[in-house]
Amino acid sequence: MSYLYSKLPETGVPHRIGTGGINFKSLGPFAGQETLVRPKHGIYGSANETAAAYRPNANYLGEDHFETRVYFEEGNGKRTFINLTVNVFVVPNL
Image 1 (tube, one colour):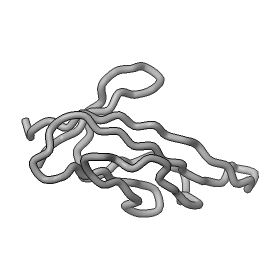
Image 2 (cartoon, one colour):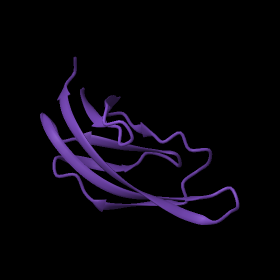
Image 3 (tube, helix red, strand yellow):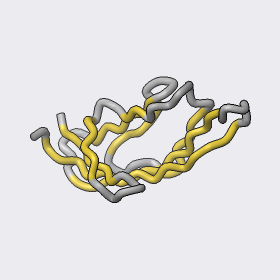
Image 4 (cartoon, one colour):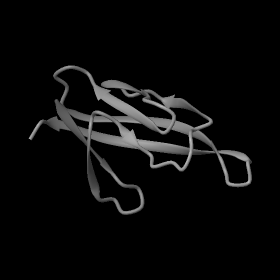
């Protein structure tokens, strides 16, 4: 298994996440998701209603990038979305 690192947008600090998934810690299920820019060196998609996953291609190490739009409902029931730009650096299992 390899791992990927992503810089947290609000701090620029690298954050290690396993390739098993990305948990958005949502208070409820997503109302939908669409990939705006696909990763060049792997795949990205919904893992369930509140999480998504990125998996690099076999034996790939290095940088990758993808963009997604996640739809959700605000507390008042209004549907809205957030665009996420993700830059990852895939490294071997340490």
